Amino acid sequence: MSAPGENLRIDAERLWATLLEMAKIGPGVAGGNNRQTLTDADKAGRDLFRSWCDAAGLTMAVDRMGTMFMTRAGSDPDALPVYVGSHLDTQPTGGKYDGVLGVLAGLEVVRSLNDLGIKTRHPIVVTNWTNEEGARFAPAMLASGVFAGVHSLDFAYGRKDPDGKSFGDELKRIGWVGEEEVGARRMHAYFEYHIEQGPILEVENKQIGVVTHCQGLWWLEFTLTGREAHTGSTPMAMRVNAGLAMARIFEMVQKVAMDAQPGAVGGVGQVKFSPNSRNVLPGTAVFTVDIRSPDQAKLDGMRARIEKEAAAICADLGVGCAVEAVGHFDPVTFDPVLVGRVRKAAENLGYSHMNLISGAGHDACWAAKVAPATMVMCPCVGGLSHNEAEDISKEWAAAGCDVLFHAVLETAEIVSDKME
Ligand code: HGY
Ligand code: MN
Ligand code: MN
Image (cartoon, rainbow, N blue to C red):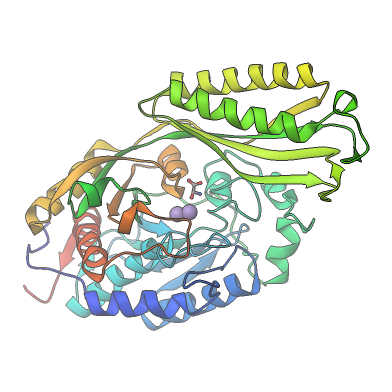
């Protein structure tokens, strides 16, 4: 098996044009994207991706979670495929590159193999996982979680969005319920190329993140029960104030995360007051605490402390306190052999690189439960992500895709090419 020629590069202009074309689907209001999972915009994005894959000669399979598996045949029908995946769904105020870069870079790898006439022993499967973001239907990484056996299909189908619509009904509505049993396929290896969504690579002036680990996560959904009452006529001593309890919990989460430094984060992104009327004290306050750390003991210690101290805060105010873990994965160690191939590809291609622990969660975290998996990362401007102003350069996008190309090629094994 010949190693890929060091001069092999993907087509940077084509990759960039493909990214900008996809960005036109489900535009946001500030230059980014709002292509939330199972919406009409998601359907349009899937249809466009499928048309590109058809043109590249890929064969499509879809599983019952709607995940798209686009296969380029290998020479050996018995060889397990090499997967290259990520997600096309976005946050409500998402960027143009989070997830999308990884799916369309996988397409660019295949397009480049076609241009070069390179045949690989292992098939290559470009993958679009359904509902990575978890913004509309919690938890995040839902389809890859079902694929890895972490969630049941029924659990996933029953997840509800804020309007009460179910995942299963919405997947059927957009016409993307596939036939394939989820998780039936086996992987030789899984690669995911992603923007860092953090500031490290840009600050360190490195082109490539060689991702060795991903930090673990808990999403703790709190439901605090106070008493709805008039904000004007209810004396302070008579209040059962779920909003005040929530505020004290937010402050406490910040302190728990700061006490766990370095290598821990904690915060809240979503809050729902009911009745959410400006002159009614909230009857309920529902919010999700998002805590993360690459250190298992730290992660679980933060969870235990937050739940204990939240109960005490609520007891002190006479507020009811219920908590449910609605998202979780332990810290992930990616496959050392694949990590080594990413590092070697960056070195051979002359790109600056450094080891990185992923701050964000990715479908690769669940893929790593069922196959050797790893990630490649490129910098993003100011480390900003999950924001419509998310930005990368064409050069950064291409460098990471070149590294992905070489690591995938080495793993899929070249059996013939025009250069022979
Ligand atoms: O939450 C995450 O880390 C990912 O963006 N779903
Ligand atoms: Mn992502
Ligand atoms: Mn994301």
